[in-house]
Image (cartoon, rainbow, N blue to C red):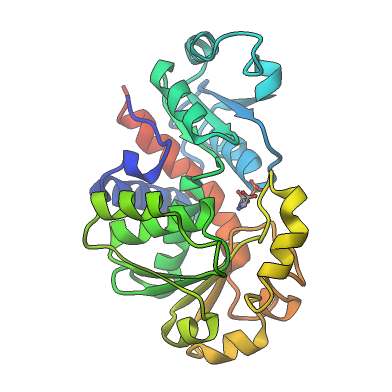
Length: 306
Ligand code: CP
Ligand code: NVA
């Protein structure tokens, strides 16, 4: 049984297979085809946090492939203590062909997957966002024609999105620099894990965004306060002054450098309207690619879990 609780569930070769499958299905859709690869298949989504892109792209993907989706909050499903996690996982996976989850706890998704009889996909936890990172690779490959050797500079928090991007970069030969304020870098546990699994990684952590972007092919940012950190938002807003992606920062980068954001964006905080709406911004290509990546991932997981 294959799951995607983290990018570490894939080998670099399998990661490329998922990207290629997504690309094929995107091209099919451009030709007006929605291959009904999984008629009658059921996606069950269990979410603990809000979502626009993840929830809707997953459900649309399953509909495109011939199936349908069911959505429940984790509390409604009984993951609030009504029933044991193992029992919920056994029951839902007896109805579902694929389960997606969005939770605070990364461990919860991994524990759930251990009891599930169908593939479980992480649709974001506090520590990982693997489907976003896979989508970002797909988007970068489309715009730059390759991944290996590119320099991605993430200006912002050492959070779920940037940690998954660092894993993605290590698995594809990209260089990743995190430019973060003191106290918001990658944890030492994450850096140890990265080094243990991908000793050849090219991930660096710095504190000067203007210097970091000088050699950037891609400048990426995300919110300063993630879901669940709302009460810390003001302290973070002060800590991240100087880490906004704005016209001045983009001017310090090569003219060919692109701008990315997983969205939702807090316009005026981590990024300005000027950058979000500029020709160098590919944020809405990223958002669209969530659909294509979800289709490719579902197809790859179902093909490899039969
Ligand atoms: N990028 C992303 O995961 O968006 P949502 O939170 O809207 O799903
Ligand atoms: N880091 C953000 C990503 C949202 C898609 C969060 O966890 O809220």
